[in-house]
Length: 242
Image 1 (tube, rainbow, N blue to C red):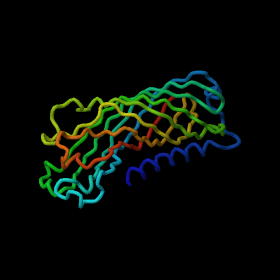
Image 2: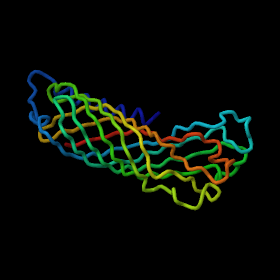
Image 3: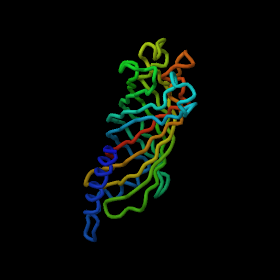
Image 4: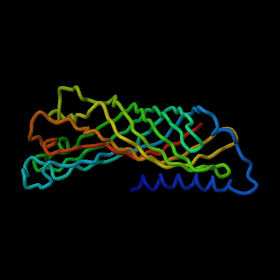
């Protein structure tokens, strides 16, 4: 819950800054910025990934010695950085490419009677993604030196930290994750027009459509035997400079 408060607070602070420039005597900064057919920039930010997990047998009664009743996901904060290419469609719509590098880490804690030691019940998953989203940005009319928008679209990503081809599995302490990931993201933000460039804070939700977990060779594995789907999701704070 803490990361949501931090991200929301950052966006509210930037909104207050933008609102302070909204008055009758405001000097309009970079007035022709949104009229350019092509626009370029870069972004930096923070992220937190976790997993949405569904089970084959939600009830522990099916096989209490092997099937975990619950997999707890412990999140940590990572970072993102990338480039922006934007093509103007009309006054309100823009098509954006945002190729980026995303790094993060999650820890899985397995609750099962057959997993007693911490070594067996904890698995750490490192994620280092090259992400390529294709986004449609819908903006409201500009008001002074600020302009709110919503943005969303599909993405494809490759996990450079994937161990998909490893011969080891959880019996050797390795939780295997798919290399390719597909999904969509959606977010809100505010364009702030400064004297020489446009600064944009936004909050994004990222949702995978890919089942990331690679099952162990043993069908009744206490780590993967009861997983139906395991899909990554994340919250991003994105700071854009254009």
